[in-house]
Image (cartoon, rainbow, N blue to C red; front, side, top):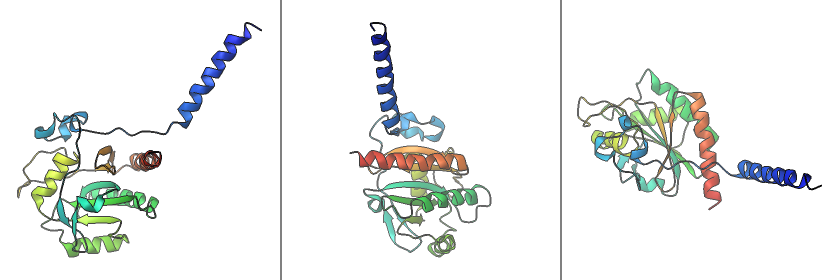
Length: 217
């Protein structure tokens, strides 16, 4: 009997550890510039290691409405950078983002934000047709255009979605497959290859984990 007691204790400890491992929800990392591949981070913010947030912006969506950070108050959202006439990665990205949209279409906590990197070509009517062809609602998914320098600064200094450097000038061009997950506090919580079904599956799982994280607070 005495020999059984230590064995039973070990088993009990194992069961307890296993229970907490199974029951404990996934907690997503909060990313600051210092945590991210330096190649993706503008040199001016690479040393920032805490309190990074999405700041203010002012752009125009497919319905001609002004869109700012206020539209995403108390929202989890996924953001990316694309252009309508892109023949390579953008169609794959849109297809994958549409999968995420369909998954969370009826969840009011989840939104989407796609920035054109060719605002000189992707006007409001062009974006409207693009969104209409996709069959998505601006209440859920904004396609935005506006000042090129502002959009490019968002890509490089806020969301860290673009690996190239530049000034947002006439000859500057951002082309990136990255999706970025942003939480309700405007913090960055994940980066995903928007051309990869497997990586976007991971994004969907992470959104559910983030929703669960908020439910437990």
